[in-house]
Each structure stands twice: as structure tokens, then as C-alpha cells.
Figure 1 (tube, helix red, strand yellow):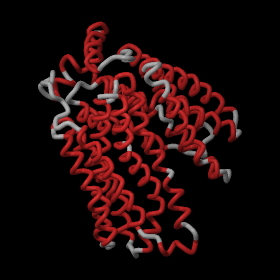
Figure 2: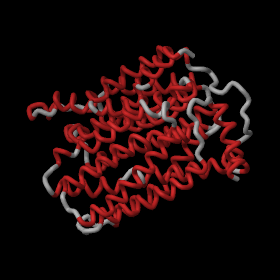
Figure 3: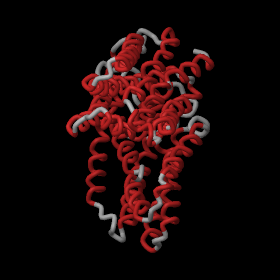
Figure 4: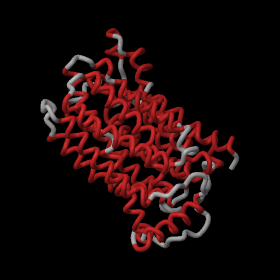
Length: 411
């Protein structure tokens, strides 16, 4: 497939993460929508839960579908499953349909997010796979800007009473149809050759069990390295000091880091960029553990936290996903992403327990958090450095052969 054709496919299928980002953004307005529709408290709770539940179910099925089923049919049916209900509620604007629509929208956006990222990874040119994947996910941030358009239209006091859920869903009834322009480029079967491994067990156990080790380590680093603890504590400090206006800076610093990583992920290589990120964050978390202990100036703390988020987004967050996709063999990438998500539930759960146990009033909270992050990063770095291979400029077949050679060398 030519580079121009690949870019066209990238642009059109990126409408899905863009719409996902738009939904996450305008969900802040849904409270107004529901109150104006006279939803009761139980209906509101169901409404808020259904999209997340649907997205989880859809992601699970998407990972299975891209490996085992017909991608062209899956894409076509999924687009119609978003467009048709979103169009119907423009006409039949009733509460029951709105609640049902919430689950359907979440399910098929989740389905397409998994299906399309694996498809994009398979068809992207070798020298541009990293760029394509990062751009695909960054369009979600662009979609998030849709909140400002909706706010400018509806958030004036005189217009609050006119807010309707259907107004926010019109893009879902139209834009997904544009993806059908490239439906001919979607194969009936993604993997035409006979798969090298007979079942899922042979991919993660036996002589391939080191892949499972990589997934576990990357899940721990991506959860704890993302510094949710910093985010939690600094958010409290911002509200405490009436500095909510600078809240968005933290998100922007992460987005800016991801944009720069577009230009580095393929030219520098995954391994070098990932290990650079680990070393940089190890150093910063060590410095933070000392600075946070003896310095209480909010702006210094906020600056260090934003530097951390910038470097994490630059070198770690996007690299993790690409490394996982490269390590998983053809025919098992969708299901491998599901397994990675399930594995990540454990460190995510432990991280949430830790966050709930934090006392934001405690003098040593940030310093202790930095020490925890330092320990996780340095342990992960020392192990990952041994197992991770340099995939720069390699085709997927060459990567798979090099992974086996590297496994034999470190065994």
C-alpha cells in the first residue's frame, strides 16, 4: 500500500478517536441535558454508567473480532450501528432511546478503537508505524476541543433551558459515514497466511512466555509511571490555593509531549526513546522526593509535576502501546491488547487503593509518592533493558524473528 493511500486511511479512521474525545469532552454538559429532560437520580446514574460499560464490552469484542472475523464487515456494521441510532434519536427524542443509545454508542466506539488501531498498525508503512499510531490517538485530544464549541453555543444563561442531548449526538449520525469511502481498502481477512501459532496459549506460554513478562512490566510502568499520585495531590493544592485556572496546563504539557514524540518514535526507535524516558523520570522522581520534602512552594511543585507529565507523554505512554503491538505476533494482536488491559487492572486497582489511602494534608505525601514511582521505574528499567529489542526500521516478520533470537540469548 502506498504512503499516500495509508495517510488517507489514517485521516478517515481517525474520526473514531476524534468522536471518542468529543464524547469525553461534552460529557460535562450531559448533566444539563438530563436535568432538562427531567431525569431522576437513578436514571442519571444509569446514563453515566452505560457508556463506560458499553465501551468495555465493545473493546473486548473488538480485540477478538480483528483477529478472527471479517474486518470489512465488522467496520461497515459498526459504523451503521453508530450512525443509525444517532440519527433516530434526532427524530425520536425520548428518554428510553437516549439511555439505550448511550450503551450502543459506547460499545461500538470501543469496538472500533481496538479494531482500527490493530488494522492501522498492520497496514502502516514500516518507517511510519509509530507516527501513525500516535496521530491516531492524538486526534482524541482534538475531539476534546469540541467542548468549547458546544459551550459557546449553549452555555449562555439564556440558552441553558434549550440544551438537548440530541444536539451533542449529531456528529455521530454523520461523520462515521465518511469512513465508508475507504471501505474497499479494508480486507475481508486481515491475516491471509497461515498463523505461526495454533492457539492463544502458545503465544503467551511455553517458549513465548517472555512476552507475558513484557506485558506485565509495561502495564506496571504505564500505570505507576503515569504519576496519578502527582495529579491527585497537585489537584488538591490547586483547589486549595484557588488556582483552578491553570488546571489545563497539566493536560497541555502531556499533549505537547505526545506531539513531539511523533517526530522521535520512528527516527530514534522505541527502545532508545523508552529507556531514555525511564532514566529521565527516575532522575526527576528522585529529585522530586527531596524537593517536595523540604520545599512547599506550589509553583515549584507544579512545574516539576508538569515536567514529569511532559517527559512521560514524550517517551513512555505512546511507546508502550507500540512496543506491545510489535511484540504480539500476527493474528493475536487484538486479543493480546485485551490481555494487556486485563493485566493492567491489577496495578490500576492497587494504585487506586493507594490514592484512596493518601492524606493530601500530610506533609510527606508528594515525597512518598515520588519514592514509590522511583522504585517502580528503576526496577522496570533494569528488567526491560535486558528483554526489550530495538525494532527501528524492522518489518513485523523481522521483529518476530529478532524477538525469538533475543529470547534465546537472554534465557
